[in-house]
Image 1 (cartoon, helix red, strand yellow):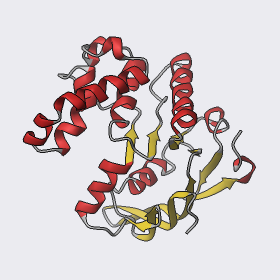
Image 2 (cartoon, rainbow, N blue to C red):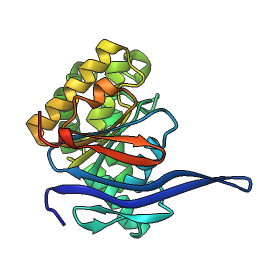
Image 3 (cartoon, rainbow, N blue to C red):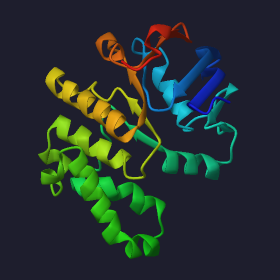
Length: 240
């Protein structure tokens, strides 16, 4: 396998069933995500983009085909291995933030560590964890809102908190599912600028789902979904 390919999918198929009717969503997806680049996946709502993202994040299983992360097949791995893949290698952000409303920004950023570690382990490392959470909030320009709960933050601030949370485990790949879809144009532009800065300064590989052509065109490599298949925009294979 090409060592520059972080994530690779081959001939992925996925269907859903409604009563006795089979509804094919993915009909043989081939995709490669190159290290250090921003790759976008663009298509209309309902085209199967989020289904594909769930498969790539090992949150669901394909009907057939395979997914490899850094050469290792993960779609048929054990549950423990798939959980480790998500917790150690991936950062995931969504359109609707998924922040816990009762927690402050810094507590939301810390939540993945609190969940993934034993109570004793977290207690022993809590000071270092807090320092890293503060550093991540500072990285996304939100340290001054660390004590604020989601209800006290704007949509852009909540998305920045979600991005900080996704960076806590120092992931090698960030999966972003419509990260600007719930934001106004100016705020969305700021979030995209932040993601590009993280890509350039931290060499963070990003795969981003969007329905917006203007966003897709800013990427280094773009895939377009149509009729359950992907078409690669080869003109964007080099970094802009």
